Image (cartoon, rainbow, N blue to C red; front, side, top):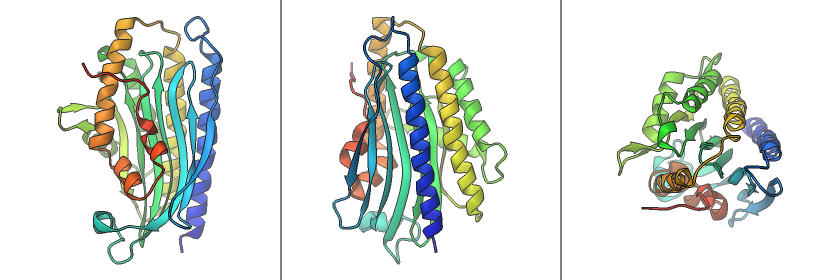
Length: 287
């Protein structure tokens, strides 16, 4: 019933991965040498398999370069059975615990504290029901940029709004608010970044329309974030700004370990631990 949809979605996530990696490697090469020394980095890819038989797997892609301090772009196609709490809470899994999931997940942490970190993921999940989910959010590390009036925030929100435009199945105001609610550090009562969009368990009844919208999330993310990086990567920075960046990254770690459902889903379904936790910044401080 779902085979063609699964194949189509999985193929798209791989295509998007290739496009993103090619663009990020181009940014690595373009970064000015007087600010970023050394050789431009390139992605290294490593395949992995779930420990359960015929459980699928994925490919982790990591870039550690002169502009991108640490960037992971990962794709996966996995299947198995939910148990325990996951079986009870996942739509369509209570009576039949079998699942299939494919997706792409990305996180970029930058050397330059003036260039914002970013996260994006989109996914397609099938139980006895099926749905899309995902989104993208921007995390500037400097207080001066962590406002809705900053140019980075204005541009990123415009890009995410454009991803929703023209798709009747996409509700931008709702997805924007959902992002703000989701990427919130409840224990600190503060946002993780400046927001973006977030959607989950999205099934309008029109698969083709939902898939087209999900594709545009990926396309507009790449276009928007690349433009922000190109504009800001030429700015020099100070040691004080680097210090602020490292402290702000601590908030990112706290959210991913305490509140992120994607991290929980990956770990509880036998995903690759290295890939799941690659979202963590390479260097971080708590004052």
